[in-house]
Image 1 (cartoon, rainbow, N blue to C red):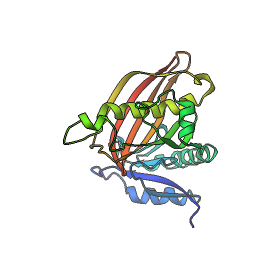
Image 2 (tube, rainbow, N blue to C red):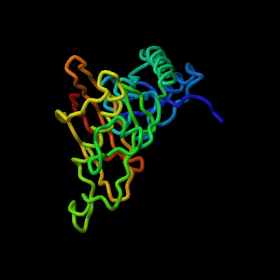
Image 3 (cartoon, rainbow, N blue to C red):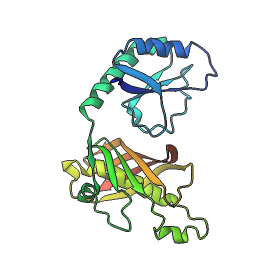
Image 4 (tube, helix red, strand yellow):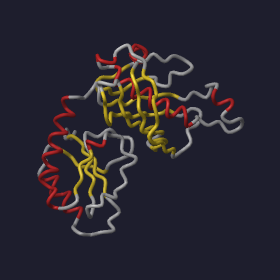
Length: 243
C-alpha cells in the first residue's frame, strides 16, 4: 500500500499557455518523494491543494475544495516551484501533527448547546480545535421541516444548511478553552451560495474552517461547505460570536 501523503492538484482552464503546467507539476512531484500529487476532488480534506495557473490571474476554480484558503498553494510559473515545495512540506508536517480527533454523538452534545429539533450535527470524523472540522448530519425523511418545505417536493431548506455550517464551526471553536461552555451566536453571513438540492435521506458532509478570529471580541469568521455524495451543496462564510 502506498503510504505517501496525498496532496490535491487543481488546474486552471489553460487559456494562457505561458508554460507547460503538467511538466511543472511533475517537477514539483519529483522534489517531494514523500508526497503524492493527485487530482483534487470536491469534499476531500487534503493537507494542501496545489492550484496550477497558466498566468498570475489565479482564475482556477477552487470553490468546491474543502480546506482553508491558507492550504492552497499556487503555482503560476517556474519561479514558484521552490517556494511551493517548501510550503507543501510545512503543511504536510502540520497535518501529521494535527490529525484531530473524532466525536460520536455524545461528544457533539458535550460541546454544542443545541438540541433537537435544532441540532444539525450528528458526529464529527475529524476535529482540530481552533482550526477545522469535518462533521455529518443525516437528513432523515421524517424530519418535520420536510412536511412544509415543500409539500409534494420535500427539500432541506438553505437556511438550515447555513445553520448546520454554523454549528459545525461552533464545534471546533467550542473545543478551545477560551470558548468552552459559551453559546455560539450567528452574527452575520458574508456570503452564501447554494448549488444543489438536499433531499430526504441525504447525508450532509460538513466541512468548516477558521478564516479569521478576534479573540479579544470573542468573534470568528468561518467558512462552511456542505457536500452531498461528493457534490457541493452550499458554500458559506459566516461570523460567530461566543457569549
